[in-house]
Length: 278
Ligand SMILES: Cc1cc2nc3c(=O)[nH]c(=O)nc-3n(C[C@H](O)[C@H](O)[C@H](O)COP(=O)(O)OP(=O)(O)OC[C@H]3O[C@@H](n4cnc5c(N)ncnc54)[C@H](O)[C@@H]3O)c2cc1C
Ligand code: FES
Image 1 (cartoon, rainbow, N blue to C red):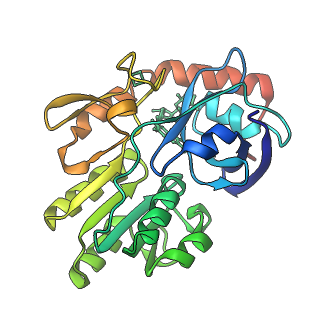
Image 2 (image 1 turned 180 degrees about the vertical axis):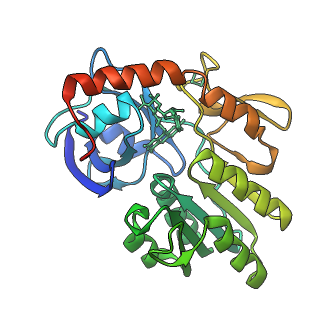
């Protein structure tokens, strides 16, 4: 169980894994995630189920701290100790009409199963993918196959439109009648996407990524304020309507262990050596 059957580098510090687990493959729906613990001493981290292939589910991981660095170093053929899931509420897949999908960073991988399910329902997909530069925009091939229109934005203009995803959103809003939006990516990106969708009076779903521990609703580490009410992202989410989220509170909560995280990564790099090649 949980054997890494394939590992592939998609972008600097971003790796795709195919992890064998029949239970996850059987029950997972778009929008759901797993909680992974690599070995006995590892912490539990949430990772989205980014698709299925045979008996394996796909996970796309960006190395940002100790646990994700360690996971990105795991080799093909090795096993992950625990994979709990599928967790969270699935995305609300329905026939809406014109759907705008906005992805950034590893959020692009999270968006793919949602996009596939929405397409299968008969929706028209307007996709905006963004990254710092061309090499960071992952899964272009997959999205060009299913998108009715695909806009790519890069901060440095190395591919597509020079700008950020909200520029791509604006172009589409001016031209098309959009019925609903999904945005998945860095927290700051999702905040600005929510403001843009609100400006145009369109409902937006975002997939929040607060710190999680159990992932099953038992601790409240993942709590977020939505519409002034406390919600647990692992059981009530991770998808919420973006214009109702208290973003500033989420930013504060995401930063609460920064000192410990930096210390733990420093110690890890001291142990394993330079990781800038990852
Ligand atoms: C439901 C859910 C699904 C997720 N899916 C994916 C995924 O598919 N692929 C992926 O690469 N990551 C995903 N994440 C984020 C991932 O869980 C974190 O990057 C990871 O827990 C960080 O652990 P670490 O020890 O490597 O880094 P840490 O040392 O804990 O953190 C390093 C830096 O990353 C930031 N960080 C910490 N936790 C998160 C977080 N949850 N989200 C964003 N930034 C964070 C910190 O603020 C810090 O600056 C998901 C998170 C959630 C809640
Ligand atoms: S992670 Fe513990 S309640 Fe959500």
